[in-house]
Amino acid sequence: MAEYQPPRGMKDIVPSEMERRKWIYTNIRTVLDSYGYSEVAPTELEMWDTLAAKAGEDNLNEVYDFKDKGDRRLALRFDLTCGIARMVAGMRIPRPIKLYAIGNAWRYDAPQKGRYRCFTQWDVELFGTDSTAADAEIINLSSDILKSLGLDFEVRINNRKLVENIFNYLKIDKKCYVDVMRTVDKIPKLSEYDILTEFKNAGITKSQATSLLDILGRKGNPKDLIPLLRKEFKDDRQVQESIDTLENLFTNLGKECILDLSIVRGIGYYTGIVFEAFDPKEEKLGSLFAGGRFDGLVGVYGKEDMPAVGVGGGMERLLEILEQKNAFEKMKRPKSVFIAPINDSVRPYAKKVAATFRKKGFMAELDLTGRNLKKQFDYANKKGFDYVGVIGDKEKEEKCFMLRDMVTGREKKIKM
Image (cartoon, rainbow, N blue to C red; front, side, top):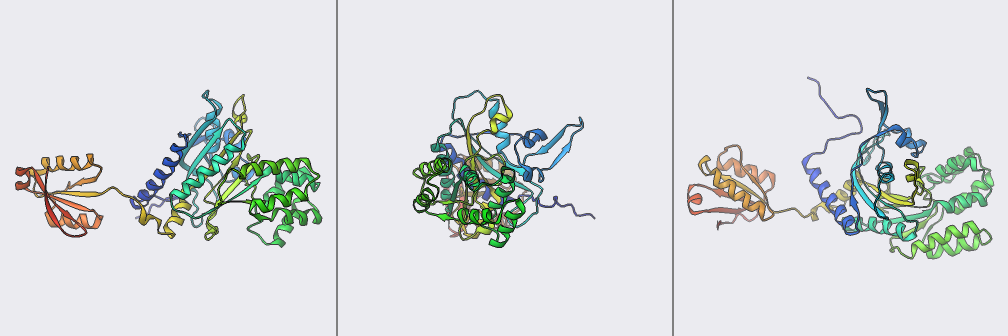
């Protein structure tokens, strides 16, 4: 008999993992609701042109696309940002527009630990203001999400405009910008030799490549790095303005935020501030969240443009790192009780007892199989119930039940 499996790079989510995901979802929603963001659900299937309009070549190469029966080219979304931006282009609501979504996305890349072809993202977008206060809010609320999960992390921040202005300062040909930017994004991951080789292949000189690696390889406390950059580029007004933006931003951020000049983000729609968060001890897992400013994207989908900044994070990476840190042991679960009727005649009363527990916030399950009491206790023990409520003819008559604590083994009679 054939064994039917999910497609490569995709997985089913079993109850134990879904319980953990729901706990993460609850933490995310609690933080975002407290900041005044509204949840939306953009469609998972987009027109190809929607994604192609501003996705960037790397992402389009990974898109799952096909033609429908009407010969229209469609695609599964590779992230949530494009769909939300398309939605916002048709909205007429007060600004700033503050939205978030949690849902699946698809990318046809190489599956590996913590990375799947179908994955779940949380995504937050703020539209309608170009203030660095908006960038700071997105970074701060993202940090609050990780803090609510008990994670240690650092947020590495940069300004793509600063990087482009440094390109201009070094007289790098604009035709090379895309390839050079792609290599800059790899600075933390590759050796100096490999980076310089990629810069050369991108079409810049050895002198330009050496200077670029020296400048963009720096990271650390912005209070130390920003004065150095100001001094180094004191005669370049555009570089100074880009540094001003970063300096203003960092005044509104926490100590977990550092300046990292190699952070540029690979997706083509980013235009200004960009950032990524990492657990310094688990960097191989990749970023815990990432995002930045994408002014211009809404204008692609509608007549009116507006500035925007956003962030996204992967659920699978959160699950991986939280499991490694045993964080799920602190996960709060509702108390659970299994209601065990001794015979069918007491089942209607047992149903009322279960309903009473649910109203009080318990997870209450009622036996549905007619098993004997021993087998009901075996089932409750295997499922990890906190309590078992036993109901027989006497309990029904007296309108009570016997409640056993499955940890201590103690029993007591409870009146309804």
